[in-house]
Each structure stands twice: as structure tokens, then as C-alpha cells.
Image (cartoon, rainbow, N blue to C red; front, side, top):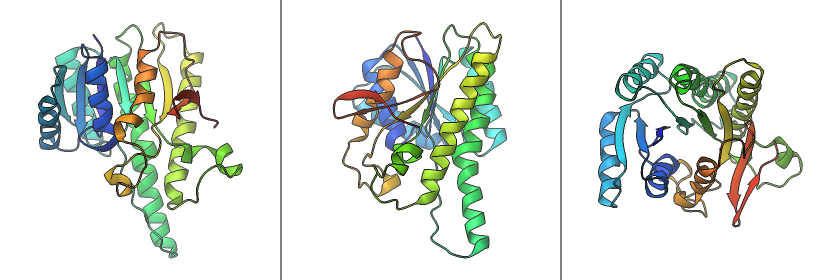
Length: 250
């Protein structure tokens, strides 16, 4: 039975990932990380109304607060003793179309702190608990918008928010380096890091404009979680599109 923590799990992609895991991997213990405990409790009620029987817990977790992250890790350690899988999903983006230098700097710093630095801190804080399981895994929820190759090759639609592309590319690079450091370490329980692209899903994040249902977007995460140890190399970028589970170019 795996203990799985999902950040930003009360809505959108995060909620869909929690729902998909509960249905497909029902013996899992799913921890819903949310800014406010009431949001997590509401999410659990919705899941139970849908017939979910998996073990569910909500954890107050603001990824931009070091104290909140530390408190969440302490809670997980005391209650569960370990963490098998961390899914870094939470993101808050402040889009700005201002041409004023101070505004550009303020919004860019805020976005990078939330989407990249905070995921780095969350991951590093939970590493001691991840080390306590036989096969620790971390999944970063990213986007093809972070693919430099696809962008250069003009394979993507026009970009509405450049900052989103920038922070996802940075998150991808962070993941690659986390995996490289892990591979070079002498830790007996090495962590596998993956990047997952759910695709363009209908969520509040994009005004519900995506063509995919969030549950469809969660399929890529399920494919990774169902894999056997050693089947899928760490430090790789994946998606499930058009019925195909495939890698995404960096």
C-alpha cells in the first residue's frame, strides 16, 4: 500500500489525479495537500460521494510557506512514517501583460518562486521520508509548454502567457538535475524523478478552455505509477495523448 501526497489536490488536475489514483489504485493512502484544510475536507467529501473507498487525508500545505511545508512533513512522518510518492502539482500563476519593468520583475519573481523554487523546497523537505520506502518516486506536473524543442519547432499553438512556459521549462530542468544528483549519489534507496504532462485540460486555471477532461489528463500519472521499478528511467518527461503513452522532448 503506497502513501501518496498530491499538492494542490482540492481542484483541477490535482483533484483528478487524486480521483484517478483512488479508483485505479484503491489500496493507496492518498494525502491531499491544500492551502486550507477546509478545501481538502471538501475535496474528500466529493470523492466519497463518488464512491471512493481509498484511505484519504487532508494536509494543510502552502507550498510558498517554509513553515507550512515543514509542518506538513512532520505530520506525514508522525502519522505514516514514510512517503512513497510525492506529486508536485500545485501552481499559482500571476499573469501580467504590463510593459513596466517593476511590474514584470514582480510578477516573474512571484511565478518562479511558486512554480519552481517552492517545488524544489517541498521535494527536498520530504526527501528524508521518501528515503524510508523501497522505491521512492517524485512526479513533477509540467506541460509541453515547457518543451524548448517543441517551441523551437513551432509545434505548439501561440502562447498566451510566456511566464507559464518559462517556469515549466525551469521545472523540467530542476527535475533533470535532481535525478542526476540522485544517480550520482551512494544512497541505497534512490529516488526516481519523472515529469508528467497532463495536456490541455478543462480547469479553472485556464478558464475551462481545454479540450481534455482532467481525468483524461491524470492518465499519464497512472501510467507512471503502475510501472514496475526499472521499467521507466528517471529524469524523463511523459504524456498520454491520442491513446499513446510517450515521451515528450525537452
